[in-house]
Image 1 (cartoon, rainbow, N blue to C red):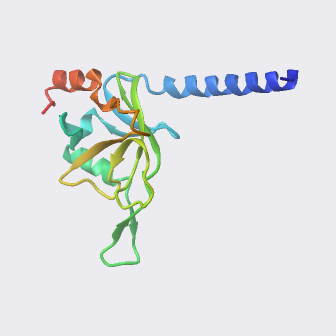
Image 2 (image 1 turned 30 degrees about the horizontal axis):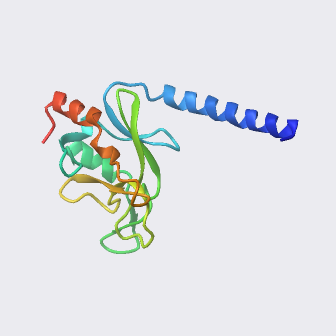
Length: 165
């Protein structure tokens, strides 16, 4: 590899590390949060969750949580009444963290998308059913069966909060 190639790689790694450290410095707060990777905006936090159902990986939203979730929705206002459409969170990458520590990453996804996405997915960005957010897992292949949603940090956290179902 040429000296220019080595220097270029060092610059890329240095910039990535600087951006990453600045980004994580904004997410060292205590508690639970799901936030957007691209902007750092918190989508759902402790105050938005009334329960975590561990056997089906569902977050039951509080009234404030439903209002927050709906704030990310997009609507076709040319129709009466307005119809929810894709956009908003669909396809965006998120991080689920507890006390500022990343537990796992995934994507917001809609069940109406024709293309499947692998990894951790929060369905359906066309609206929560009965005020719930569902977290799914689509392995990359048959060998990648370890489900990161089973992390004990999540169960322990919501058990301490009295929100585990």
